Length: 182
Image (cartoon, rainbow, N blue to C red; front, side, top):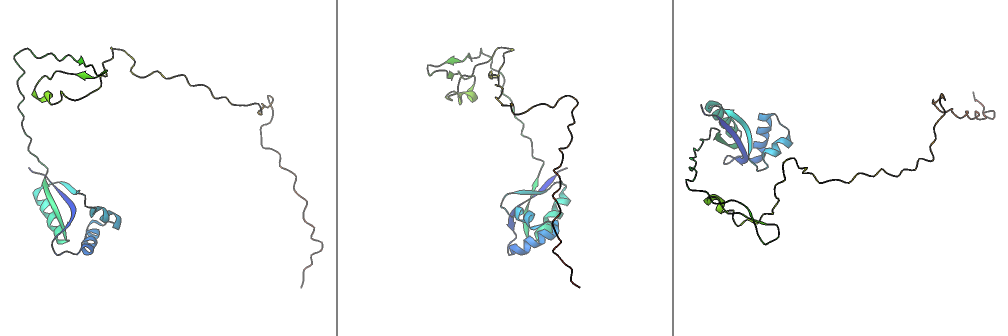
């Protein structure tokens, strides 16, 4: 059974007014203006996928009545069968890399017509590490930072490490010269 997807690229049906279509889609999808603006960005956006033929036609007709031209695409793409070429019967050409005279660059003899297209590619000779070799570059030991701690001291054992004592309260202001009027 074929499955379909509905995609929208911002195209409108002929004669549709853009603002009216945006309002219709906002109501249809119950979306805010920002999401509707994303629909009209010009990019192809898949609205719904994995639909059967009846569901896809229903979405297409509803969106076209709202003024949006959508694309219905079959998701079941045919798989192309590829027949692999048989291995060559003759002895294969040597593939051993030959270091060229250009300082660490490789020149490789192509094994078939496909690889012959890559024979002129200039690639660095990275080489192959032996089994069990450490591939990460050695890092120098990190030096401990020089921090001056001379201004700090330790409290004696058993001392109280609680809150610092508050400063005594200031004396109350002198209000003797103030009078209440009746």
